[in-house]
Amino acid sequence: MQELFDLTGKVALVTGATHGLGMAMAKSLAKSGATLIVNGHTPSKMDAAIKEYADEGIKAHGFLFDVTKPDEVDEKIGEIESQFGPINILVNNAGMIKRIPALEMEVDDFKQVVDVDLVSPFILSKRVGKTMKEKGGGKIINICSMMSELGRNSVSAYAAAKGGLKMLTQNLATEWAKYNIQVNGIGPGYYATDQTAPIRVDGHPFNEFIINRTPAGRWGNPEDLAGTTVFLASNASNFINGQVIYVDGGILATIGKPHGE
Ligand SMILES: NC(=O)c1ccc[n+]([C@@H]2O[C@H](COP(=O)([O-])OP(=O)(O)OC[C@H]3O[C@@H](n4cnc5c(N)ncnc54)[C@H](OP(=O)(O)O)[C@@H]3O)[C@@H](O)[C@H]2O)c1
Image (cartoon, rainbow, N blue to C red):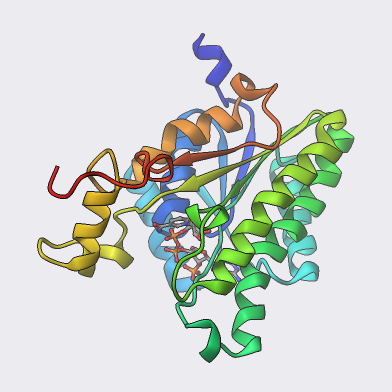
């Protein structure tokens, strides 16, 4: 059975993998045998990331480019292909959020979020998908969100983009299944990352909200994404097309726990 999940000989590119969830997913792919290519767009963060990967015994190859720029993407993917061979696994993880109430949000801010969270997965998938088609298949994993399903205060652009990303996932899966390319998504719930550290403290209302709203009763740890990432990147998921798997401790499955339980 282990062979089903083995990624030895595969080349995996994870965008936005200089920290956070992208880094956790990237580590899981490398630990399952894949040659790991990581993207980011800030040189200092990339340097720190490559060191962190190395500290865990992982050789990560860093490529700096802006995922929203088609020409840059084309050039860098070309470089990756000539150095490492065709990309077999693409994880579209790079993302951003702007928490601004809709009535106060500038159109340019809205467009920037949609550009990073929705248009860039299309740009990357189109470029990498072309080679996958020529080479007989591949795996694309789009990192969605609970906001692919739900609205929330102040995140109109993010919800619009992540909802769109779910539908892009379904559409690319439909178009490309015949090329043996499986396109699926992962929807993380609320995760304990550096960004959420200030609100993950006893007594903070948002911390209480997460603990009470999540059946599992806790925040997710980035490592909680490892199994689903490897599964969707491996032969174990060869007949799964166009699904988003929510790794959220059950939060989307419920209207909440009784208070204090
Ligand atoms: N954290 C959560 O609880 C949560 C929940 C649901 C979904 N998600 C989704 O999961 C993904 C990762 O989340 P995260 O919290 O780990 O995010 P994060 O810590 O903000 O990391 C985002 C990554 O994306 C990169 N990035 C942003 N814009 C880019 C661009 N234009 N070109 C290239 N790279 C770019 C960043 O690179 P630099 O380091 O160079 O800036 C960074 O590596 C996102 O798609 C997010 O929407 C997160």
